[in-house]
Length: 302
Image 1: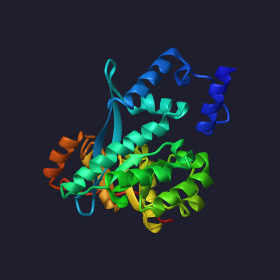
Image 2: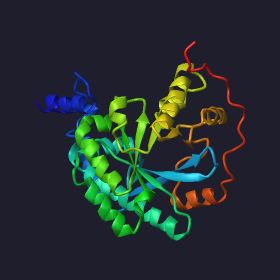
Image 3: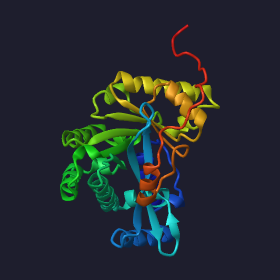
Image 4: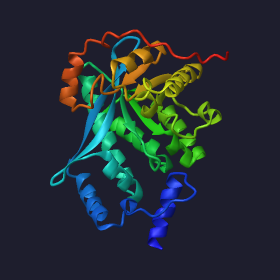
């Protein structure tokens, strides 16, 4: 019965009709219970830290933001990536304390950059469970005040699938956050189920194109057309278009040719610790010289 319950919750979270029990997703397994206990400790003993990946404007070449990415420096297991512990936090009620910790770290860094005279908008990812927390907007307001950070320097990224868990509740929460002045971004756009009717009513400022489309643009014409379509959709809705997963000069050139607004990826920089980020930013000379953008099939009907 316990295993059937686990399978049911996974099916609901992933919008699946049927899901077979998988021990790897069972938070009651001994290994996962051990990791859960370690995560509780990590939240109070500074084992979690953030890396920052730059976001670069393709029109000006300037660094226009940074995405905060959480990592766990486990005392015995070493570096643990978020895929290994964020689902665990989501399924056990620790996602609230984890999100608070990440927001605290990100806003402390945003405050430091502002005090240095080089303010930068910091993006933090939210999970589906966060969007079900009606107190999240109050928490964000509390932490912005505590750190003395202007609301526009915080961007919250939510995935389409997270919004679709409870669309009405998510929309209301995002509207309250937007009313505070916090920027809202839809992450991994194109891989979820948001309808255009829902999209136009959400208080978002940007669409982040799912990396699976961006990384394969050069080898898959269909994905290149999808990327171009999302960029045009963004602009038609008055939103910025962000491409993540930019791992080569050719992809960057194509995105520039499509009038994409912002790029993020290993070709520009990997996620960096704050001190290394500051050094990289100080020596950033703008977007590298781009080769001509390759021709693509027109989106216009014949």
